Image 1 (cartoon, rainbow, N blue to C red):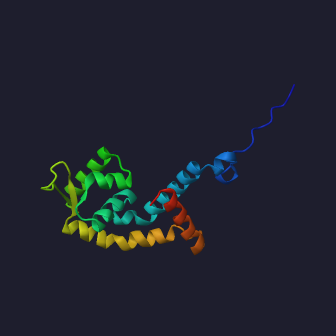
Image 2 (image 1 turned 120 degrees about the vertical axis):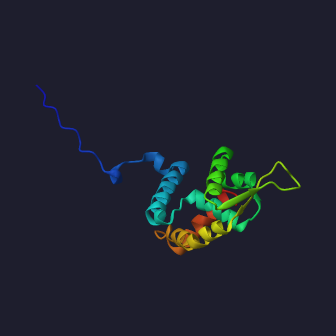
Length: 155
C-alpha cells in the first residue's frame, strides 16, 4: 500500500517560473500596462480620470479642431468606440462637434469652456502621476525606456 503525498503548497506570484514568457515582449508590455493602469486608478480615480479618456481630451486641448478620424487613428481607438466616447464627452458638455464647411464628410472636435477647465484642473495630477510611473528606474533608465518605446512606436 502506498501513501499519497500531499500536493505541494501553492506558490505565490513571486515564485511562479515564467520561463520564456518572461522575456516575451508582448507579455512584458501587457504586464507593464496592467501595472500602470492599476496605479493610475489607485492614484487618480478621485479626479474622475481614465487614462484613455484624458488622452483624448488632452489631444483636443493641444489640437483644437482635430478631425475625429485623425484622433482615433493617432490613439489607435476603433472608430465605433471613439464615436461613443465623443458622444459621452458631448453629453457631459466637455466637447463640441462641428462639420467643416470645406469638407462635409469630416467631424471637427473642440473642447468647450467646461472641457478646457476639466483638462486644466486635472492636468497637474495626471502629469505628476505619469512622472512617478517610472520611479523604480533611474532618471537615465526612464529616459531610455521612453526613447526606446517611442522608437518602437515610430513616434
